[in-house]
Amino acid sequence: MRIKKHTRFQRRRSGFAAAAALTLSFSLAWSLGAPASRARDELRAGADTLHGFARIVDGDTIVIGGAPIRLHGIDAPESAQSCKDAAGKPWPCGEEATRVLGQLIGGREVTCAFKTRDKYKRLVSVCYAGGFDLNAEMVRRGLAWAFVRYSRDYVTLEAEARTRRRGIWQADNMPAWDYRSGAWQLATGEAPKGCPIKGNVSAKGEKIYHTPWSPWYGKVKMDTDKGKRWFCSEDEAIKAGWRSALAH
Image (cartoon, rainbow, N blue to C red):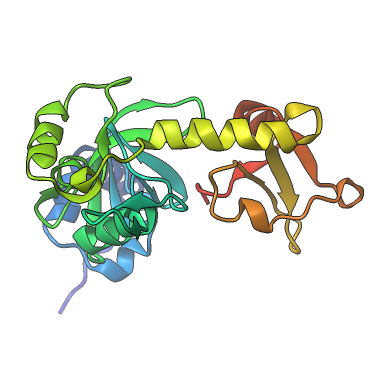
């Protein structure tokens, strides 16, 4: 059988055409079942979507291909946050929210519709996996509050979860934003110059900062002689070259 050979120009033109087609139809191609081995947790980008395998950071944050993604319009309990159950007993709601988000994703590829980028450079998005609108489902299950400071998209679902006393609505529990505020105020009173963010340096030389609500905050022992630093804000830490412990 005779094999037709392509000239360098034809191969180059073919390559350009293929690249253009990939750019225009990337989301469709991957939704039609491209092998998972080809994805390898890499960032898959369309015009305004991300598609790929996700690592779960907490109940409202995931990472795809190294890009931290904040779920739009919701605020889940912080990883270290504890709530009360219907009997008034302590319940690790932060851990439960993280676990359930991971369960909803179930190792499947996630598609995120990009909305904006927040001041911490996270991609604020509505994300989908396994037939679920992840943002909506976390609120529906009572594992996230509607973050009305930024959006009212999920207030109806929150009302449903509250009526049915699901998850965080089993008892009178502190919203995540109040939990963060309380942790911040407490840490500010104990930190040098009132700057409570811990800028740690790992054994590998990685610069990672921890907020007072980080589950690792209490474990970080500060020694400024080893390059560790205190920061007054996350923005200050980011500008100095540190990254969030919850976004790597």
